[in-house]
Image 1: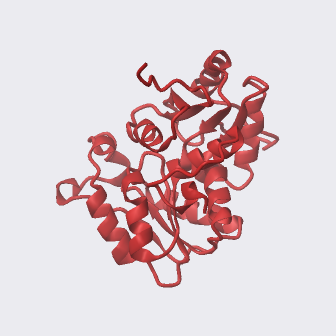
Image 2: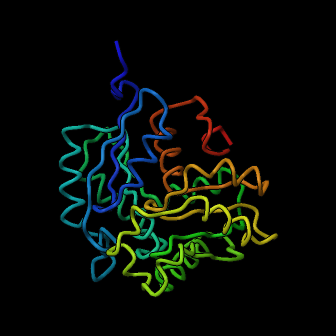
Length: 262
């Protein structure tokens, strides 16, 4: 019989930005056989689970809560809040607070996690302490600064942060407006590769490609070979973490040291 992508080893649920195509495409490209991926789409602004006024905890946004309820029927092994910006905007304690809120609504057997936590764990696993931070063109200056501050709070010394510079046809469009003009489905990985290689500082001991809507899975291996340093990408990091939680022990080839076993 032909393969039907049934999750007979594990099912993974991912919460993704409603108008993005990259997360599902990259997860399906990287995931090993026997692992199925199921997406719930979220329309809220970051963070998807806002802090309460007294910061005693967070409350899940409506789409996130609905997604948790839907996953109750799917019963995934892992549910990933796959949104880098929520972690960066939420701040150092937000990941854990969001995980607690998700866990309270998900099936007991489902492990909740966030992309921010996954990226931090991946960097630590590879021994990266000084990552060159690369972010999508649509991230604002404030969000880039927030990402640097978030990583610094966990002991990562970012030597440089770079925002991908798109093709000339996007000149004159403000960062926050790029999505509305179609950048979610118009990303050049060859150009991204050239920019990362050119801009990576010597003092960086690794590269972090942050943003789950950032198309980059296809260049992870090539960047590692060219720069001689490990690369962590947002979707790759969350897949690695989800596979670890699900008990997957085999190497995944083609997408960097992290999925090959570090």
